[in-house]
Image (cartoon, rainbow, N blue to C red; front, side, top):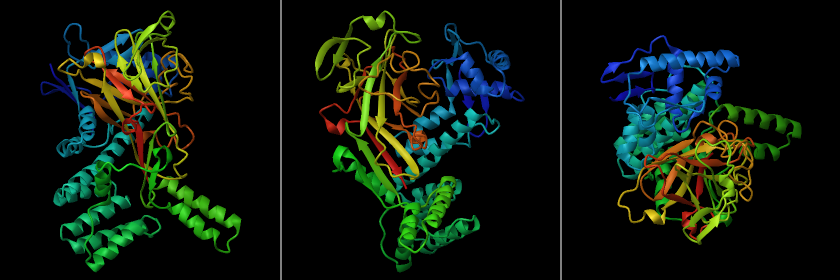
Length: 524
């Protein structure tokens, strides 16, 4: 029995083409959507009640949860024996990821994470509108903003991929869609003008830039265009040959294998932000310090509310000086303490240093590989933190992608098929040190407590079926990291249908630097 649930553009649920009646039941939709979007791990009932009904007392919130849960279970048809729709374990609830269902949000997220142009095209087509417009809860607003940002980033990425393959007409259509969705993005406007010119529409390209400048003026923005946009306009006016979109050139450069040459593999390109440029201009003129500070504060406030229009820059963090990483091993899933297990010897298989017995409470920061596992007896997570000192202050981060390299456990090498494993990235909420962090320290409870040790809302997830490089979108970790809450991420195996994961993540201690974790930040 196949259950289909759509949330993008509005909530719809059907089984065998028969729509389920969820009308006038916002609490039911709220609970159902929350469980579907947080199906990676069980959620405690009290945490779930507080997340969905934060303005109610604890007693009222629990009553609302019981009522909505009863409605949901009554609405759902009987499921096969041993495979219920909703799992209830030790006071926690979880949507059963093994149930026979289809969710448009999952399809969208998986498609846009692909490196295939066709898959990304299908992914952006899957986005039928913003997430659950009929709901207004705080958790929905955060999820809605995250998915919309992913959608806009995917449109930009798709136009990049199409332009890279010289499919300018397809890229033009994609860029037009991006400008329609994000009309105040100067990057989108500039690339659309560039693509118009490349397809022979010189007048349309100039009109695109002129109309955008008029739009800025009508909306109260300063009409000053960036140097890149002005240079593009001058080239079009002069009828000069121009290169493909700048984002396509960036992709080509990344594929060429160029390595940054600065210490700790920290590479940056690009110019100054609008704020820094104006402050530097003012500081060299006969203005008083007080006036300069006031003007700078106003500019910073404007840029905090509106998307900045400065030139792009890219920074890559990699290596032991820029990326701190370790891993932690636990007792059985759902355990509240590691008593008994943490006092036993545990056979650790290191792919590069041989084998040796270690204990789960031992810090693993110096090992060249981090195990990632979710099995019947062991849960192993990887922790990563990034040194943001090289990121200039007050910059707008447009995207941040973490790339890791996974190796297969040697014990699986002879097996023909790799069982699928879903790895999820969560933002860590408390300070930790790779040289001391273990499964029990410094967390509130062994193994990290969702909502307090790490954010229960995932940043990104990938389903892995082969070794090699895997990329996670960490863009939503900003601006929290920029406002002083930079504690990194934890990578967890949230689904392992075969009961075990065979993958090891290469850490910054590995001798092969090309396989180190790296965070690529695009900002302006």
